[in-house]
Image (cartoon, rainbow, N blue to C red):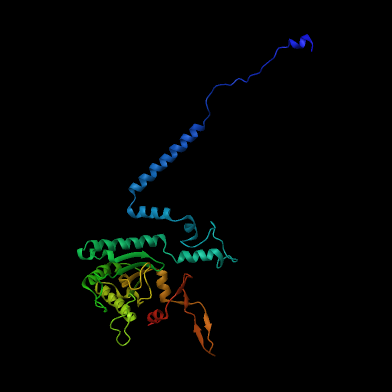
Length: 316
């Protein structure tokens, strides 16, 4: 190496960093935070000024699972966010038709709100009467596919009827006649059904059994409702089920199974009972005879099994 190369200076280059602001990212974060905060206070203000029914509607909306809300109700089982159709443009087959059928067979949000209002009015009327207030624990409200069901339960300490008969106790009579004017204001048809426990009827005279007892108690309840002001034309079905329909989580001989059920029917269910449409005619094994399938189809396309006795009673 030459002497000139040893004397060459070493140059070190350093990049000069200019000190300045950190950009506008913090402004975006602050704006998002303020927007979210404003939305929060806006929602709180709306809820504070909303009525009880509106708040219940909002709570019901957020308590519904996403898949259930999209597919039209609980148990629909669809995982597709967009309902598919059948091979034809009318969607008479496939997932779309099944979802539409489920939607029609369930109460809508407006109907649920309507039935909740009915329940509140009945409970308010009972709370105003000291005697009826003691029977509040013997009542239960729930929503079924057919409509609003009001169940009146029996207890050992406070039975609704005389033992083994359809004679109505005074407090049960007072309860039915209090409910009657409220039900009379509704546009819906009504159904009454009687139920017993599995204990055999003690009299058992000339074939009298829990079937007759449940039917007669349902009919006795019908008479008390009419005496309380209910329009007889509003009643569509009165039936007895004996001990064949047991309440969940109860034994067949449980006193709670001795009950009367008042059902405020949905309009499509009432139409199906009044005008059952035969799905298909079954060929008879006997020559020249035909039998009709027991299944009927409502105008909404929902298949409903209606007992033949009910159809005959309506036809008469």
